[in-house]
Image 1 (cartoon, rainbow, N blue to C red):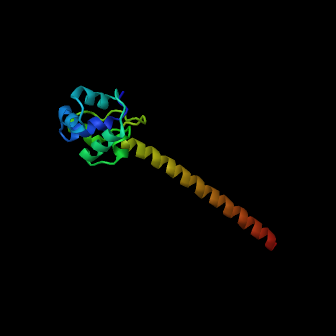
Image 2: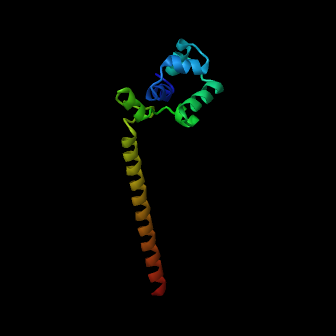
Image 3: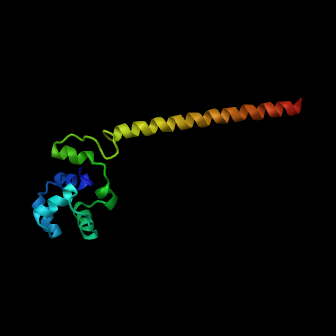
Length: 126
């Protein structure tokens, strides 16, 4: 399993051959292939050069979630990302569901607190 799938995805998205990227990095094509498959450790020089080549931030280059646009450019299905979700839409739906549940719980707590305060206030009046 590739540790950093965006390295390959960005190359495909930009229509670069492995030989071209390898030449920019100053490594052989087989050595570059190891970078894409995770068989070679990434050093600061390689990360910096790839970020410059693709004009991306290091986080985007190294995140384990594959960019959908790159898959589309390669004609591949997006598949599962590194977090176990089929795509960002599913993740967003799960987050929104959790957020909604948190808000509903907060509102219930506030209503309960208001009722308690109202009862205490009424008891003090009586």
